[in-house]
Amino acid sequence: MTPADLSRAVLHAVRRAVDENALRAPVPARVRVERTRPGGSGDYACAVALQLAGPAALPPREVARILADRVAAAGVARVDVTGPGFLSFTLDPVGDAGARTALVRDIGARGSAYGHGDALRGETLRLLHPAEIRAETTAAAVAALAAAQGADVRLLAAGPGRAPADAVEIRPVPAGAPAAGLPARLGPDALRWGLLRPAGHDRAPLGDDLLVQSAANPLFLVRYAHARTRALLRNARDLGFGPEAGSETASEGPASPDGGPGRADAHAADAAHPLWVLLADHPAVLVAAARLRAPDRLARHLEAVAHAFFDFHDACPPLPPGDEKPSAAHRSRLALAEAAGTVLAGGLSLLGVSAPEHL
Image 1 (cartoon, rainbow, N blue to C red):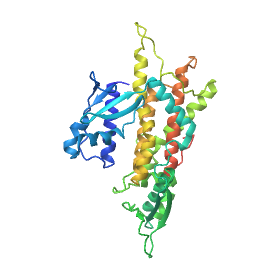
Image 2: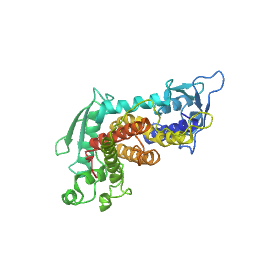
Image 3: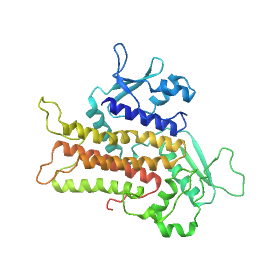
Image 4: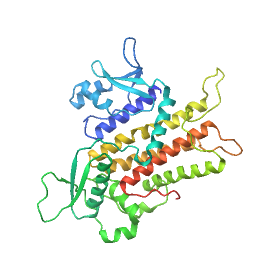
């Protein structure tokens, strides 16, 4: 874990807080993270809360608390608010590899239920929606997200009768296209993605670009990333090995002359880091999407996971090339790829979109 890694994690937390309307302040271009000075607590510290307090019209310690709740980074054991409003980071005592191994094993153990929890347990949600295709689709996705967090959810179609006083209305911008022809033209998966991917206050484009088989189409990118993780597992089985989340790093590069980790190892860790952070952040994304009744947040998160997976895949191939024998690094990379595929499949399922193993 480096200051640059922590800086990216803090920036991500700021963006999340702003997106969730928990913080009203401009997102800075960069965040400075430094080693804690003598007498301070933790391993690293960041003063971004003091910088944002004025624009946010909040006390610095309150801004720091908002950000601390949203920092997700592999290798960070604890985030504390200290002094006038500093974020203090204590790294995982077993090291990054231990935290990453625990994350991958947790995803493997929980499968598609990874990120499901009890954040809304005890709450009863009555979701009222008009008889319009986008409202119906959004309400169904919100219901799935809320149920995954333990809520008791009831869907109610708006009608001539009086709505219950505690009903929450789901009324996104209408699709703006005849509903009768949409399923036949786009198919169920592209239609649901097209309706759910834009924020509810934005228009939902439902053109044929949803069917394009290229990375320019976010739906194809996400589903292809999932299919690629399954193909890697099949190919690895053919080569006689499987995923193993161990204490190894994402790559084992050549050692440097002084015996320390080589450049290839550092490069691999840099390439894998965004993917680890996004996987660790998945439970928080599901909670936010459920609380804010915003399935578009999950869709955008899945896109980010897919991009990070392909960047990792290209920098750290999980399969050995040519006659090279599978190593512990390959097994570890394959486990991370499998975890990414699990998160993608689980997220698509909550949106009502299929995740084919062959694409």
